[in-house]
Length: 319
View 1 (cartoon, one colour):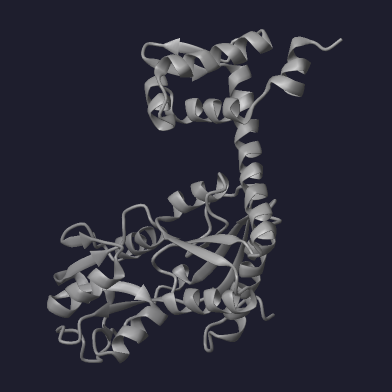
View 2: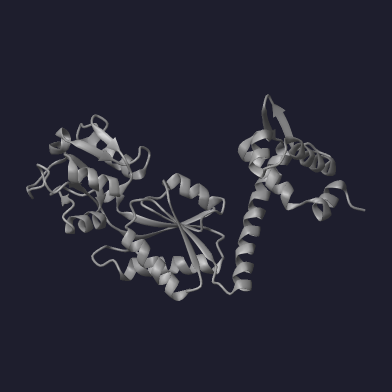
C-alpha cells in the first residue's frame, strides 16, 4: 500500500508541477506566475491545490500579496529546478541524435575576454562538429554565473574567479595583463613614462562598478590617493570606449590584446605605464556535473586555443 507521498511521486507528480513551484520560488506572486505561463490566476491556484492535496501538506503560504514556499515547497522547488535542467539537457541530446546534429552549446563571456580568442575557439569547435550550433551571450560575470548554475549557459569565460562554489569548476586558461590606454592624439600618448598620478587630470572611462576590473582599478587609484569617481564615464562597451578615447581626452584600461589590436589600427595608444597584472587571468567556468558531449568539446577547443594560439601570453596549461 502506497502512502500519499509515495503515490504522488510514483504517478501524480508532473513536470508542470515542478515548473510551477520553481516559478513561485523565483517570482513570489501568483499574478506574476500566471503571467509567465500565460494562464489565469485560478489555474495556478488549482495546481497548487492539487499538489497540496496529493501530498497532504502545504507547499505555499501567503504573506500579504506575496506567496512563499513552505519547507516542503522549497525542497520540491530546489530538486525540481535540477530535474528540469536535466530534462532540458536530455531534450538537447535526443534532438541531436534524432536530427543528426552534434548539439547546441551556449557560451557566455564578459566583455574583457579577447574576441579573437573566442572566435578562434568557436571556429575550432565548428570545424570538429560542423553540424553543431553555438549561442554566444555577453554579460557581467554575476549574471553569467547565475545562468550557468541554472543551466541556461554551458560554459563561461571571465577575467576573475568568483566566490567558491562546489557546483562549479574553474580553471585558468592563460594570463594577460590590463594596460592603460588613450586616444592616439592624447596629451600623454607620446611614449614618455607616465605614472598613475599623471592621469589624475584627465577624464576616465571605467568598467561597471562591482566588476573585477573596476575593483582592481579603484584599489590601484586608492593606493595613489586618487578617486576614479571624480570625473568619469562608466561603460563596459569596448567599442564605445574606443570611440570616446579617439574623440576626447579620456584614459582607460584594456586587456593587452584588445589594446594592441586597436593601436595597430591607429585608434588607440598604449601608455608607458605599469600594467595591471592582478587582472591577468582568463578563466573558464563550467558546472561540475557537465556531461554533454558538445559543451565538453567546446571546452576542449577553448583550452587548445589558449595553449597554441596566444603566443607571448603565459598559460598555466603548458606547465
